Image (tube, rainbow, N blue to C red; front, side, top):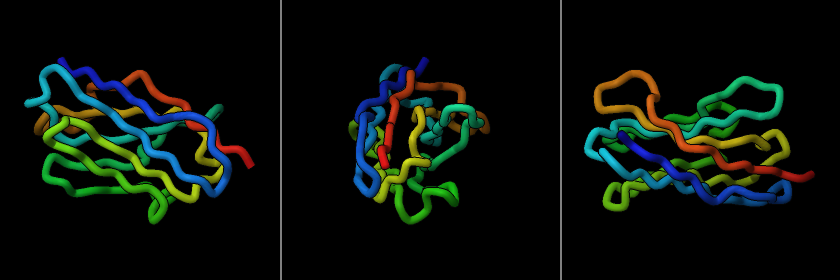
Length: 118
């Protein structure tokens, strides 16, 4: 089993920055790709960014150029640096992990709320 714990959410003004962290514990050897998803009130969940075990990254069009996902393999932690935040970025952000070779996110954190005020 893998446990994921997010931190770093809160309130920020539009145009500001925030960094989210996600620490993995447990069966970390089994972790493959990791990603950040978000769900805004009344909207479907969307994948914001992900990073493979090899370090390749992928971003949603809505955050490309503003958000950066990174991974500290020694500390089993993944980060999401969010710059130029807008009110539309307001959502609950969830860290998730796939098992190595897996196609679906099977491990999820509890989520952290990000609120961007205008």
